[in-house]
Length: 306
Image (cartoon, rainbow, N blue to C red; front, side, top):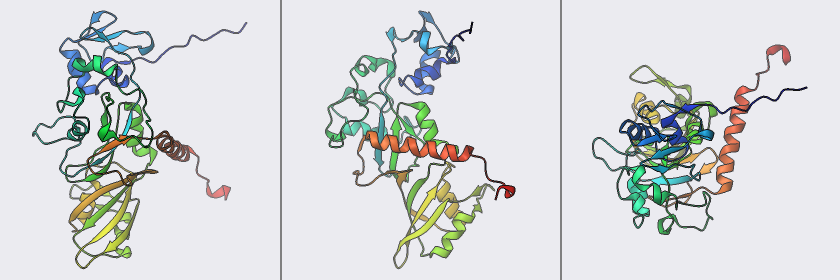
């Protein structure tokens, strides 16, 4: 008689569980736990690493049960001058200001870093569909949004395509260098170069700190009398990589705009607005990541096989 293996679920930390459920970020969850606002199966827990089986656990925040949220996937055209974070210790304006401006009639976005627990009742009435139709205007939408976090970063001086989601695992895959999901940037620089010069970007140079910096692809888009625009594609996620790469070559950046992430194009999304990804857009990103991951794991042919 064949024995049946008992199916078990993997245990994760309590803070991660709240993030995985789409309730808030892991750092916000850790603060809620440490301040005594989170109960696990009716017991108060103050350790963010308390192990949790999501399938067999009841988590409450301030007495309100936390359930899995509808997955939400947004794309924003980030303006220059905003920092990509939920809150900033220097008091600078964040990308959440754009969310609040677009959803100003909704109480979910009345502060730069809303307290998730105080808004849990409203989030039960949050967006029912992660993929509204293409004709939906987010800036006029009356729907509420659950907590979302930026996927990766664009520095304060950079602009363009930014993804936001409450699916932390999907966000980690998008940002991971292992997926080799290319990020495409249009960069205006203070000098005129040609395509032969751009080869130095793909060969790579060492930054001031000694780190090797390189682009996957680079070409000249158009040139003027004193400056030109480059198209640069990266498949890594190093901090301020393009600015540091060009600085190492003695070139100053005037503007830096991310125009695509993998197959997803910024296209004509107005600056300072956002919308939900369509199902086709989300699926195309997933297919691109899966194909890149499969190619990375595929054994390379040896010389004997050729």
